[in-house]
Amino acid sequence: MRYRISVIILMLLLVPCCCFSGSLDVSDSLNSRLKPVFLGISYKLSAPLFSSFSIGETYRINGVKTDRVVGLKSDILLDADKAMKDFNNFNFSEEYVPKYDNNIFGLSFIFGYSFRNLRVELEGSYKKFDVIDTRNHLVDNNYRHIALVRSNPPTLYDYFVLKNDGVEFYSTILNICYDFAVDTNIVPFSCVGIGEDIIKIFDSIRFKPSFNSKLGINYLMSQDMLLFFDVYYHRVVGNEYNNIPVQYVSLPNPLNISTAAKLDMEYFGAEIGIKVFV
Picture 1 (cartoon, one colour):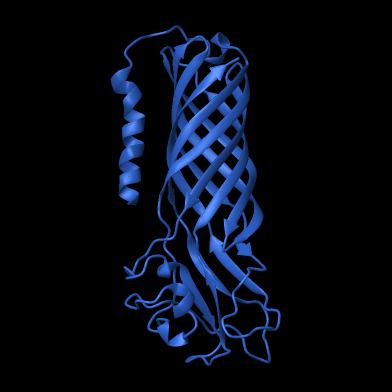
Picture 2: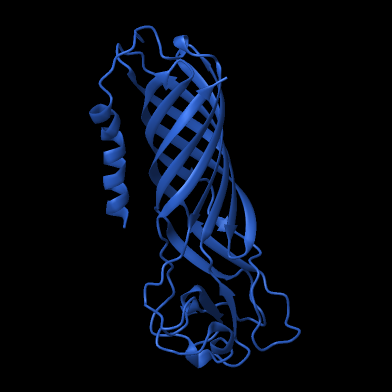
């Protein structure tokens, strides 16, 4: 799927060159012709570059700690609620390593101020990278459920379970952008930004700082509106997610378990949008 995202990015960058043949006088700078305050909205495509996944207990219970992480077998015909009650329904032939899908429904909203060739933009965006069923499970959504096992093979009380619904991002980024003045209606730009991500992972909400960069082009459609295309890169600073909630299958009143996940998260993509100057 990632090669499709790359092809779409290239197509987005070629669109303005192929479709717009007009010319406007922007020899000074694009922003010198526009009002300083603007609002914008964009549609985003993203491909994840997630790596180094791990999850387990952060301290030992009676000298025992998480030994393995496994998923449900793909050929069982029970739904997850029933299957998880029997540890024999888990696949102990391999470790569980999640794979995440591309995001094709990302949205971004922008509020900004421009001065000559510089722009300051406050951007809010949403993306979700869902987990992929890499084993073609016979029952829908069984691939989302995993077990953290303390012994191999486990006993009735040596495992607990949780559900992977993917990773959701609610991001707020402050971007500083520069428009390169050229004598054409198509103006290239670059941006760097820092911000904060609200990340939902394993039914937990966590806050993480993040870094963002963009490289793109503006096309001036009128004195109050421009169309823009860019490719971007986003990286989350920090990879630890503590106090992950888990489900206890057999123990009605279990000891408190402290569970933590680690996942390096970065992604790249392309966006197309419109800015209106007010």
